[in-house]
Amino acid sequence: MSSNKGVRVEGRVRDIVQSGEAVLESEHGVVFVRGALRGERVLVSLDPKAKRPLRARLLSVLEPAPERTPVCPHVQRCGGCPLMHASLAEQRALKLGFLQSALKKAGAPTELEVTHTVAEEVLGYRRRARLAVKGGRAPLLGYRRERSHDLVDVDSCSVLHPALAGALEPLRTLLAPHVAGQGELSLALGKGGRPVLVARLSEAQPPALYGACDRMHADGHFAGIALYAAGASMPASFGDASEWSEGADGEPLEGSLGGFSQAHAAVNRALVERVRTLCQPTERRLMELFAGHGNFTIALAREALQYTAVEQDRQATLALRRNLERRALKAKVVEADALAYAIPSQLDVALLDPPRAGAPGLLGRLAQKKVARIVYVSCDPQTLARDLTEVLPLGYRLTWAEAFEMFPQTADLESVVRLERA
Picture: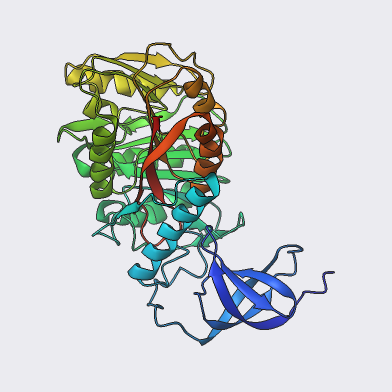
């Protein structure tokens, strides 16, 4: 049994790391704890399962920082909002610091100014969420605990869009009691701003669950439900479970079933407009990598001389083609892995929006083709820094960097940088 069991430690927080955890100085060395702020003196209980680095559970704040604010009742248990206890000003300063530190590590010029687009809506903004469900005599519905598979039952979530927050009750009372086993529930907004649900459940499901899904759709609780049971490749469908949002042109933008989209509508509009400005697509040959269902494509393809959009996911590619067709826009859509796709020799601008893992090797390949301008949208400053380290020595200058507050109350940060060939 670990010697850390039951050990209580006092210490002062020296910093916050990119996960949102506080770094605590103690007689046991460095300890990571969630829920504390810079400068606070806190009392924690060491996690008996953690070795190095040590981790702990916050017991009490002995000397609170002035930046501390009230939080939702679930924040200490669920893994969703690790910075909710910090004031908005402190959250923004921390996350801007994460990006600045990453760019410095990558070798960005010291004179580069990092701009910051903040969110006015900091609660009730999330257009998508992933929950967990566990059936049985006492069904559970909620989020996973931080660094754990444990399910934290929640009856409300203050960061969810009102339509999604309102979906928690029918999920809890109508769906969860009939679930066999456990699984993940992906919530998003569908047609007409109503919720859609994609459920992926571990076991074969009883007829009562399918009946519950049918009723939840027929009663108007959900615009659509897609139910995957026991690893099925095709879902049982009730209505249209595709995600829909407002595109940059103000027209409806179709998403893929359970696919990726940005969480904050207003901040996404600002991001798309910034990307368009940085790419300057007019009369240029442009390639978009990791194009998704067309969040950026529809804003840039209209002006470009030639446009190629590369996306690996089949459902996202189909939605992208439909979004272009509805707008009578022309673009070459390629279903392929962006990391392996052959970069053409004649290319003016490359736009990439990779997942959290970044795009290892891709910037180097773009540099080999002497692409004049690269615009990189990132959701992780650390993988962004790694990828920039690869290309900055190859004759490219970092000429723009901006942080976007896409995920208020969390430690996550969206950013965009522009690289230009010297």
